[in-house]
Image (tube, rainbow, N blue to C red; front, side, top):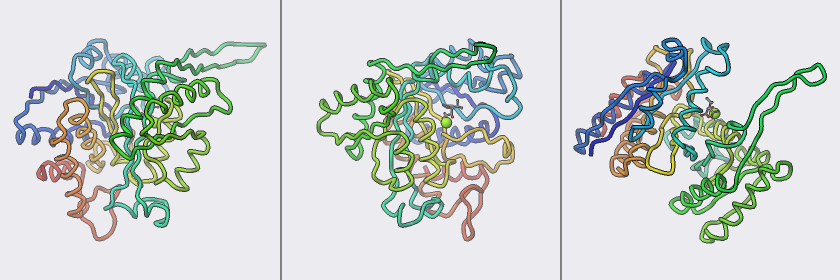
Length: 356
Ligand code: IPM
Ligand code: MG
């Protein structure tokens, strides 16, 4: 198969980690007789420096025209004080919105090889952590109206959080379908004791739960979810929630595995176009030092094969190659401890590629 991939390396460690994912994809192409064409587009701070905007219109058009988009990370302290309208993050939100990437899948799994990297006690993680956060990605407070105005002599700022029935229903369906392929359970997270948008969310989820009666359904308030993730994370299978709750809970959940550098994500549209990226940031403090962990990006590439290209066998091959690298004792600095083999970003990429 021939596929066109738009590559957004971005800022900080973005270029290093994406290079490793492409190294692995190239071996997949060889082994399974595919051809992937890569088109690089600047995004984030590097684009602001070159063009004055975090992504150009041509760049956006190349994302839309691709079969899928692979992203490293954007942002860094250098661009922390640029105008809000051109912040690096703005480009990421624009790509999500313009490509219609409403469903963000964040699988959070404790690699058995790294069980002791979790900050939770063994008695708590003993049952394993394997959950899927399904985050709504193109609605809610991220995309509501914003304004700062002066009222009675002081500044007042407003961010609106809006959800419509169809937005809730389509993300709900992604969650229920995903649960059918996994553990068969959906927990819908909201703040229905306070927010109207959450009350609508819950009502729509309840209708879906009737339709998907084979899936075990529960509602849970977001504050309680934050607590339950620490208290008993293995109770969860699929968690579905709105944009900002999902942003916060997915960071919390990833930390339970002790290794945010390992976690991939997929942002899916109603068609096959998707964007794939590790959930960690651009880590400017270690950029260019060849010590970043490329596994989150490599696992994101595996999700790209699985979800956008329907190449399950190839995706499995990448996941096995990552597990073999860990089984063989290779560790980047973030997951290293005594008795293991410390490798850099590029070497980890080479090892995983050679395991394919
Ligand atoms: C994420 C990030 C982004 C978000 C930022 C960079 C805008 O935190 O993908 O979780 O808030 O969605
Ligand atoms: Mg986040």
